Image (tube, rainbow, N blue to C red):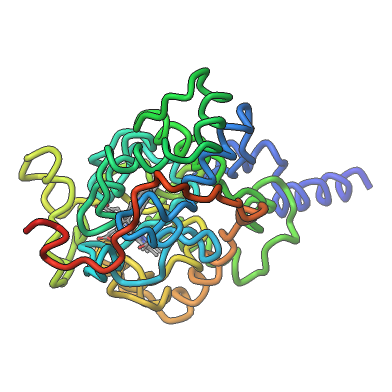
Length: 338
Ligand code: HEC
Ligand code: HEC
């Protein structure tokens, strides 16, 4: 009788490790909901994120390329920027980007605030200038009032603009995925196939790079360790920042959170099917040819990483005034002065 009881205890312990065990022993940790300490700033940052007047054309907002209705990305191989220019690299998701060690594929911005200044003035993205953006915002009384409430004076500076955008971005986390429910002890949250996929993901070695709460974002790694990656995209990755030859073709490991939503994959956006991305990773990074069943299982597991998406009312943006600099949606060489 005693023995039987011990047996049952043992089996149930094996089948369902206690909550604390999973959290302590798994290489992946759950995403926690954002704690919002400055709601007004977050609201302002949300407006700026959605405001196309941050671009020269008056048409492109952060949300154009980081569409929060589509996993925080644009689902294009590379982005379309000002004057329909072809962007150089795939747009990463902004979801959970606050969890990354640095921003951009090559990590050239240390923080979200530093990052946000980039696209505004980038000629192939929003093509505005920091002066122009500040002029546009200053011409709109409701914006002046909001900045005054949050920052203590009406002065609108690039620093304040990017600070507010970063505060909003920090709220763009996606907790409560089925995988996180499982990590927190809910055994029914995953199917057998998904759980088998997670085991293969660990056993094959994917967690060497895709680990932590974001399953990525924590390090820069060479793309194509065992076999080279073939691409026509000229990006060379981290070497652009460090100048070190060892960093050639090393990229920030992308997060695999919400990866089901953020196709196409890799820095050149060359792969549309998640199965193909998984297969390629196993070959290039780990030298493994996996059977189709393992690939299907891992793909099923990766789809359990889709969490609660940002859910909020669409911000209403204050109208321009007679003093607001007008947008230049159709640029001719004469407009740009070149
Ligand atoms: C025209 C498309 C486009 C627009 C507009 C745009 N981005 Fe991006 N964004 C990109 C691309 C492409 C990258 C990757 C660039 C790179 O790594 O070199 C990127 C990178 C990022 C990253 C880094 C994510 C990571 O994981 O490294 C963040 C955060 C971000 N953008 C936020 C913003 C914000 C905030 C705005 C508005 C101020 C904005 N973006 C406007 C295309 C765009
Ligand atoms: C040595 C580190 C490393 C290992 C091991 C590794 N990856 Fe990656 N993974 C990366 C890097 C770096 C990228 C980005 C490469 C690029 O875009 O050029 C990436 C990209 C991906 C992407 C595309 C994500 C996106 O948004 O574009 C998927 C999916 C992926 N990995 C899955 C896996 C799976 C599954 C395994 C195990 C079979 C694995 N990775 C093993 C480093 C690694």
